[in-house]
Image (cartoon, rainbow, N blue to C red; front, side, top):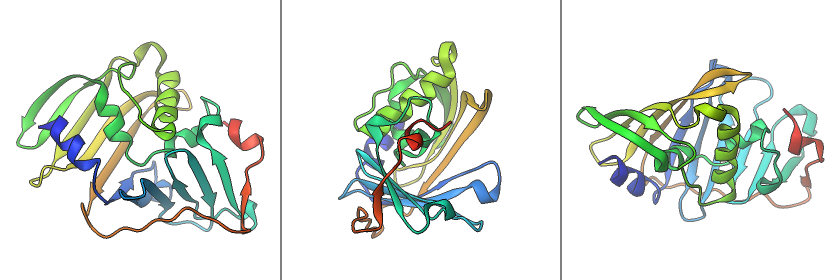
Length: 207
């Protein structure tokens, strides 16, 4: 049932909420399945960072340091330890769940289990870079990552939470993401025009 939900969720438009440590750090966004483009934006704060992720590129905007410009980065060139890798693919639960080591049904539609990140497979630059980042942080614990997941009555993956080893400045961190509005109209376009500039080299390696 969980594997079927992963496959079904991968092919539809949806809305997403990625929980942060505080409300200001939480991100909301959506995924355009036809274009394979996702977006995330901070929910509050004076600087509201917006991220648009295509299969191969990241576009960052909204920070005062950018002075109205949109920074373009090639995902494949990101340093393995760059935290930007965490936002390179809004469908990361679907990638992580390709590495299920064991899983149990705890209630109708509710699952708990263990992931082996070394077995997970990414199909885009974004999903592969995300895996590189979390594997690097987890090191020897990459094959014992605990997770919970829920599948809604329509068979879509609705919620995913994993405890990622050493992901938060050397401490374990919760990666909690919710999907909703499956199949709803979503149109996301890749930024173009004079406001899009190439990101400086330092942005590829910042930690």
